[in-house]
Image 1: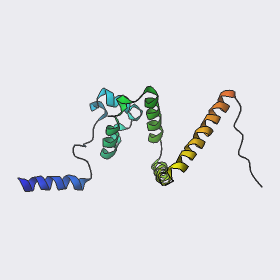
Image 2: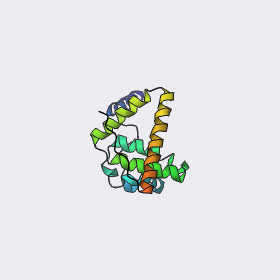
Image 3: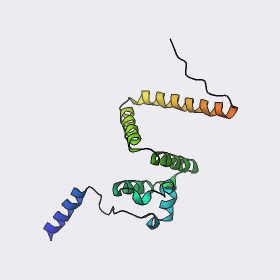
Image 4: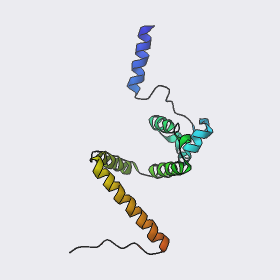
Length: 137
């Protein structure tokens, strides 16, 4: 009995899938999970088991998000789902590199990006086209 439990545990470990992480069809998800993962509804059934498992873990936090956070979650999930595998790998590499930057410098970069985004929003709202990047001789 004990040996069979050990063998089962080892086999689960060798497959690389978490216990109980069988492929889950979209229709078998709860309404709350479907709401959280709505941007992936069309491609859900074709996602790998491991990716489905990771995404299902994120749905546990979803009900606690504010409406603004839920919108941000959906927009990011939709944008990520549209990336090619190469673009996803590039994004992962940028994230890894950015996480190695000291915290103070990361905060400065975040502020600069936020200011840049706010400027673009203001320019598009006012109808003023963004200035092309200047070319220094």
